[in-house]
Length: 120
Image (cartoon, rainbow, N blue to C red; front, side, top):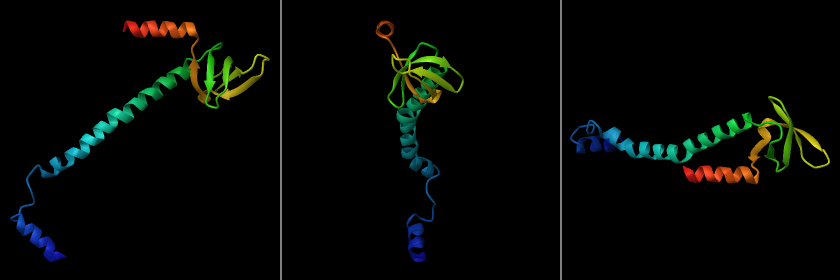
């Protein structure tokens, strides 16, 4: 084994390689990491930030969808939990604020948002 390593070193003339050889060899790995960051990690961080802002902005009367698939209307808010009404017969549930997966926009709000997006 030692003889094989010595033969490789001698075939190169005893040189360890060009001065920038290690950096150039790492370039494909660095490029792949950058592509992965901009296509996968950064959009996910942006989406998570928007979700956290949505959770902070919840108020009474908002229609929401929980992670369990329940649709409801917020009746009371607190820092850690929400009380939502899930049926017309005043059935209320106390849930964690983090269990909200989305805010449901009414048709009017959706149309306004589409108009705003189309102007930009």
